[in-house]
Length: 378
Ligand SMILES: Cc1ncc(COP(=O)(O)O)c(C=O)c1O
Image (tube, rainbow, N blue to C red; front, side):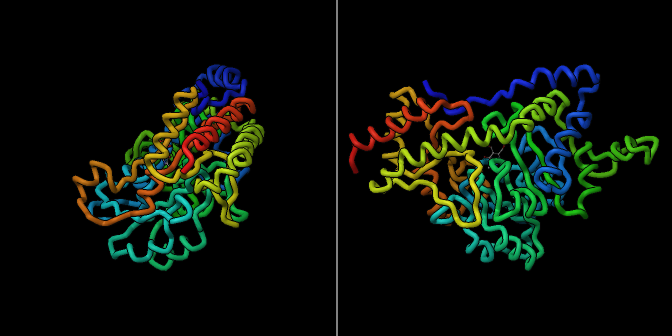
């Protein structure tokens, strides 16, 4: 079976974890956490970085920093992972769904303004597959209405909007280092805070709502409860594993690009049959996180997934759109339609993509997709 994903191992993980052991401090915000923070801040120009236990966890931290309270509204695209929404719902926000674009799974920027009300506090945009949302347009709308923008950049490490790295533009951004991501540490994430006015508060929220970091800097001799917060730090073992991957990020990206390009070239002829391969807007770069395409219909997509499975290849679909989720249907019943979110949920297929997927296996995947379409000419 060709798996859908195989986490990358750089080979340095054990050595770095051993170093963390030798340093004798495991609980977080130590040597490797600081190394990761400064790598990200220097390499990509991020504001202040805070490693967390997952992107979900980073978004939870963002929701606290937005001061979300019951009655606030938060706009998010319907076609996304559940974690884009749950941290805001947890603090009592009403989730206001926006449809996705017709020609990209990102949020439909044209619809955002009509969804803004006096209660709107934040807008969470998802760079699907690391392909940038139109951030200039988004930031302009947000600034006109005094709304905070959070980039859900779970897929987006190394990806750019024009010349700016994703994660540098919104007030905050959340990254994922889950084992399915380009660089990973099993479970991990990071909140980037770009809004300088939030820096001081973010340190406290990150450290369980305490001023512990001030104490570590010698600014106070004891620490205490000063704000909302949680235990958002990952352990030093997790940070050591992540740092072992950051060393090789360029190599990982080169390897993923090779597979992505191979799929794209190998499947290009299927466009004649109505299959929609990803297209990039001039402002988007590719970080080769996901290779996805749209089948002609839900039934064709499901049949293709079954065919791949029978050919010993694991393809996947995602996401079930959040406006159709049982939780939202019960909590916020609405008849509003989101035809593009439905389209991506029904017709998207994702092919195996990981750094060490061999050229031969990628060929096998391409051949299987093509033979499915040959046998089932639409
Ligand atoms: C768009 C998006 N946001 C958030 C997450 C949550 O990431 P994590 O598993 O690190 O919590 C995911 C997971 O893949 C995702 O796809």
